[in-house]
Length: 150
Image (cartoon, rainbow, N blue to C red; front, top):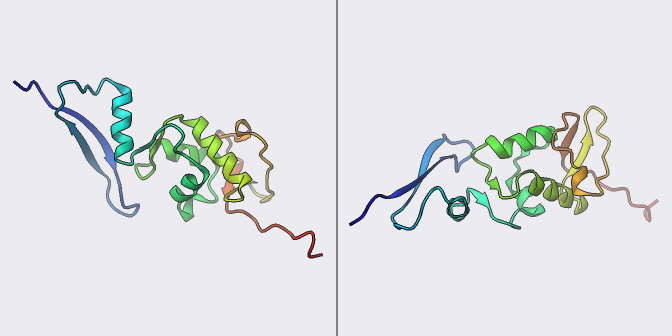
């Protein structure tokens, strides 16, 4: 005799220009419980609603950013990962985002610039990516001057 299905409900928006809607995952396994955070996380990751451990890379960050995300403050970028249904959840939260931004800066995929001046900021460690900053902005990488060309 079946006791009940288990349901996970989440906000979805597969098309960035489309409408938001409630989506649902249903499990009919009697041993599954939505109270098991690991099981829920794995189910959401399987639906591309979250990144599992080690999956959020600099290229993944770049792939998930839209043109209008560049120019936003680091604080706004961080907030988007917690509130925008188009962006998957991050297993390690802020640590994953800091690491991905740090690595993306070092791979010249993105830049961090000072608001107003546009001066690039050097990032030598993931912990230096201040996700609470309202004066540092995410930017497309600026062209590097060729020292051998001068």
